[in-house]
Length: 393
Image (cartoon, rainbow, N blue to C red; front, side, top):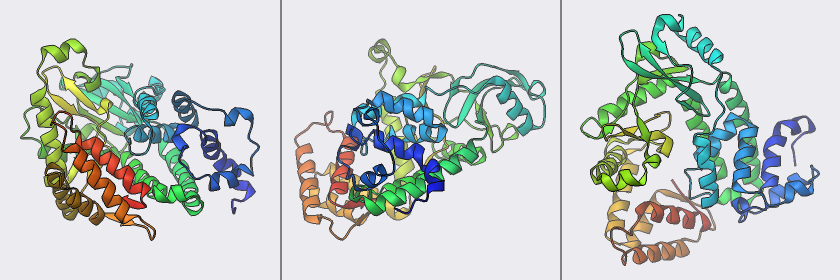
């Protein structure tokens, strides 16, 4: 190994975490070559080798800091990478984040806006509506009487993010070099993409423009709401936007489900996402439960546009072909399209990949519309691709 002694403290935090979970379900399929080499440089106690639960992983990520909390949040939406118990546990990171003291919030707002909160706002609630890994949201009222939500970025988070992401970049390169599994699943590519997304998420000016763009693209949808920014009260560290009163989509209880027909909302949401991906090439890319709300007037609000996905015309066309092939149960065409948008290694098992994909598609033909879940099917296809040495774009 080429890690010099003075850098060990920089890497220790992440390496210790990986070593702790190496024997759990989260890394059960991993090749341990790189980890074995790292273990030579550290004394592992019995405590670090015992089985650890998904809930303990959540606590460890919180203790490691905001960058790792954000990574955990992102991983909670990746069923293609992690087992379900970990997905459920990591989902709690979307809500359970330490609050920023109001004194710090007030200081940031006043520095960014160049005026006292009492002058900028008619009222500004001291208790946050939500506290996330990157920012905290407070309800306020402008001098005009307009109710708004103000998102304030955590102090010092940019510096912490860059330092942690640099460390992860070095470690992912090392893992890919020494671990066949890390290379097979493209861990370096995953982290590169995550770095790109997280750095963009730190710029609230960019998010404000994303809100405007998505609002315009989806304006024809009667039941979809995109809160719009108040640009005069927004900076790179503060985002002021329309206040949307509602509840997380997952908090809708049983009585509401039985008394209300949500089919129109569901159909419109699906149609809105198809438009974003296939026609606009610009999509809300972080639709976890905390970012999808049911409003009081029975509409769906898409919150938090820090993470967006952009699709090239070629990729849009391929996605459309893929959906059509799935709808026609054409396994041969499905595997063909997937290979066209993929990278394959020298030893990729193309024949095995085609065989497995065809089997999944044929199996789905015997299910009715209610049972057929295209999303889960695509996740299974992605896992098969990785196992066969193929990376889907």
